[in-house]
Amino acid sequence: MKLTEQQQQILDGAQGETMAKVMKTMVMYGEAFEAETMVPVTSKHNHLVTSFGLKVMSPVYDLMQQLIDAGVESGQTFSVDPRPVDKNVPANFLQNLVFNKFMYTKQDFYEGQLNKLGLMDKNAFTCTCYMDEVGNKPQKGDILSWAESSAVVYANSVLGARCNRNSGIIDIMGSIVGYVPYFGLLTDEGRKATWIVEIKTTKKPEAQLLGSAIGMKVMEDVPFVKGLDKWLGTKLDDKACAYLKDFGAATASNGAVGLYHIENLTPEAVEQGESLIKEGAKVYVIDDAELERVKKEYPVIWKNPDAKPKLCFVGCPHLSLEQLKDWTVKIEEGLKQTGKKKVVINTVFTASPGVLEAFEKTEYAARLKATGVITSYICPLMYMNNPLCKKMPVITSSNKLRTYTSARYYTDAEILTTITGGKS
Amino acid sequence: MKEFKGRVITPGEVTAEAVVTTEGFNTLASLQMALQFGDKEVKCGDQSNKQLYGKPLLGKALCLPQTIGSTTGGLVLYCACSMGKSPACLLFSNHIDSLAAAGAVLADVWVEGASMPVIDCLGDEFLDYVKDGMKITVKEDGTVVVE
Image (cartoon, rainbow over all chains, first blue to last red; front, side, top):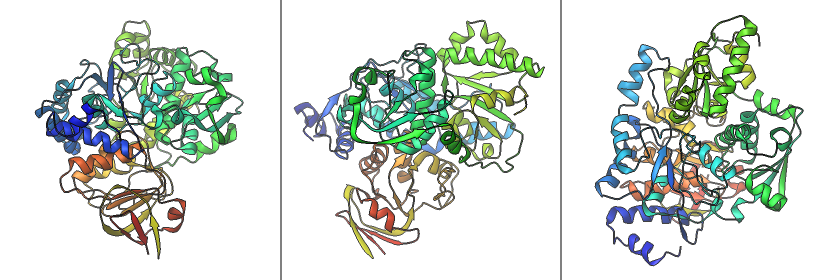
């Protein structure tokens, strides 16, 4: 890799041993991808994936402490993924004991480290940092050093920023040295599609199911999706963005997609059209039967597959303000139909602190509360990440949560029917 | 016995028993529970990976096309190496992905005495040939002997 004089000096130790190791990490990371140069990070803020003070992640906190002790500075402030625990979310005595005395015992310590390293503000804990209510929305063409798979794929695809699927720790190291290696999704060539996905469904495909199917098929490749504009329109309005947020999260967690193009909708597809498709691109046709096949193949690892669900999570990735309003109306209508006053299963909707604050100012907040739904800022994945939850029948419309935990996936419509006590 | 030549991401020599997945290896889903709750064998916890689910990974030669899933993947690998709970080596048929590369590099630079050789670009034939339980020998120059 060709380094500038300044980069070489850092690598040689001019700014101390720790900075040299940070630069060495970024150089070796780039060399694994034959990167020839490092390019400046240009976004205003970074976004980090590691938000949780898990006892087992001690090596991460030790490394962060090395950075702090060496006095290295992050050149950017940053948002970070959601906090893991919230007392508003139902948990039994044993779960609370495990969360607070065993699992997340490093939470306060780690948040102290994040503050020292450049946390944007005390509410900057969410996987959807790009929401207006959070304020970490990069510009088109910005070079990022972000991690969090769902945020990276959204920033690349919907916002037109440029970011590789960086791992945790690499994310902050990009902010510290101010550069990231130039490869993959930062390059024009790396943003070209090697898959054409043709949507031929008879109805609007479920975002998280479609994303799952595509992710499992294309793995880390870039898909160019045709026929989805029929269902989403050609404008990136709130509804389309919320759909793409959920779709992208599933492509990234069920596969390793870091960028997708939606014909006539996402910025690069609108500007460059089919010239984004590489010669010899493979074709994947998705119809109703294919989505059904994918859904049927999800394993059910509940001890009793017919168990009555005890908890429902919606909002992984975190819900938008519009999604919270939509769900409020749908649940009210569902309860009216079933003649019930409140949801029949403990149900938690998760969203960023900023979105929840905005939601609280609307008339919908009281209405949702009246249905019995709980709102929270947590990461459902972090809540589920323990053996006690493995035994619990939890349902979700998040294909990301399904992938990492024992939660069982249902479509939004199925979730609505189940939590409002309807017949499925 | 067959020999394959790959590209060295992080060097080292090791002999270990193969565990094989032809699907993407979801690092977070595979390792998080085992690391968190002290599973001595570090059994794979990824319910979606039918080839690996429930199999011990500690000290094995993990043969895979690439890693997938959460961007915590690299730091999970880094933690596994720091704690001495990692596979003995990672052998990729494809070009390495950004998350696995991050984990390999972080371990190499920041973990004193870490030794988890990582080799990529071994080719599709490698994954077609290697099966669970085969003996794998990794050499310093990226040669992988399967027998």
